Amino acid sequence: MTDPGAGPARVVVVGAGVAGLLAAAAVAGDGRRTTLVEKDVLPDAPASRPGTPQDRHPHVLLHRGLLAAETVLPGLREDLRRAGAVPVDTGRLAWLGEQGWAPRSRQYEVLSATRPLVEHVLRTRVRALPGVVLRDGTRVDGLARGDDAAWHVHLADGATLAADLVVDASGRTSRLPVWLTALGLPEPRTQEVDARIGYASRAYALDRERVTTAGVVLLASPGRPVGGLALPVEDGRWLVGQVGVGEQRPGREPDAFLAGLAALQDPVLAELAAAAEPASDVAVHRRTANRRHAWERRGALPDEVLVVGDALCAFNPIYGQGVAVAALEAAALRAEVRRGWRPRRSARRLQRRFARTTALPWAIATGEDLRYPTVAGREGPVAALLGRWTRELGRLAAHGDTATQERVASVFHLMAPPLVLLHPRLLAAGLRARLRGYGTPVPRPQVLVPASSSRAADVTTRRS
Ligand SMILES: Cc1cc2nc3c(=O)[nH]c(=O)nc-3n(C[C@H](O)[C@H](O)[C@H](O)COP(=O)(O)OP(=O)(O)OC[C@H]3O[C@@H](n4cnc5c(N)ncnc54)[C@H](O)[C@@H]3O)c2cc1C
Image (cartoon, rainbow, N blue to C red):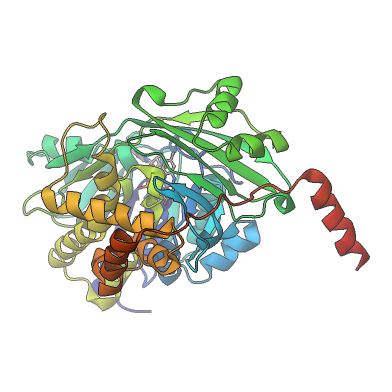
């Protein structure tokens, strides 16, 4: 055990969502007392809860996020798998982008599970860590600097927790700006890009054998501002989601949900829903704006206060980046604690690092969203050029260029910097296509196996 004097001895984490749990895992140990304060009463089993209204919608954990999460909670992938999370090979998704169907390619494994299951597994792991206390059913109401120079975290029940480090992981609705302005600090600089995207999702029961692909994604685009997805989750279920922009945001009426699926750019999701049994009602969610606070700026945050997860930077969820970014932040926090925490300097350095971590996912999410007429503001010239080039690469991929598809995917999975999209091979492929034509488009994949053939396949397997 190392000396707790090497790091903050008392840490309070506000919010026990994914970012809070991962941050607690990152700092736990070394004789430290880590208190997670959560306003919801937390369930003992995977279950939806009011503090995370997004938890009935599909959640994938990007490969990069999984690698980062493993550094703070080794063996997490295996735990999630054992609990039922489904590994999804993203190169085997039926993926319809703006330029057509993507080819099958070598990509990455992501884990797909319901959000309550992911949280449950994380919670179980974090509760078991030394020195971690989870105070649920308790809201944090504010912060103040005590006479002892420690932070005093005020709870709604009147209690106060002393802390040498406070981590705000309270999500999109974080009240930290209000708490800090009450202490005389300036409001943080905040940027928002809101394409007004709405989600509607429903769980279905469908035999995995009936679907030949790893899942389905139909991407919305400014020309066609509706889309959808279907991903397998635990217990033989599928989550089928629909998205729409502005006036096209879907509602919670089951018949309208089915009609919405049928009106998408391809009928595959409607066919999938028709072949399956509904296993829940329709959940809707509309709080999807990209929003980030410039907490890394000098003087924005007091010493020994950190902000992580959606409280720092929330993304349009369509790209599935939020949990991965929270995991990357937790990995950086752990590295800093292990390296030797330096009062005042470590927290500020980390907050600057978090800002750099969010930069690429922010550029990906807002670059697309700024193309929608529902959004005020436009991309800068460099971002617009890169966006146009990425769409050109998408067009090459939709005409069978798997190497290009793999490069683009590496950036979207946060596994490579955007510079790889300017590789000479890609530039040459783009030029060649312009001169000689793009070739044959990737054909529409067959997604659903007719019920009779899947049963026949079953019988054959059992006989052999
Ligand atoms: C429709 C939708 C789909 C998504 N799909 C994906 C996906 O596929 N992949 C992905 O990576 N991300 C996805 N996301 C994003 C992901 O949900 C978030 O990025 C992630 O949950 C952020 O975690 P967080 O812990 O920062 O915030 P949250 O999960 O929102 O947790 C915040 C916690 O803080 C608690 N809290 C708030 N205020 C207080 C207080 N004052 N005192 C005590 N507790 C408090 C809340 O109750 C909550 O438990 C999706 C989001 C949406 C909306």
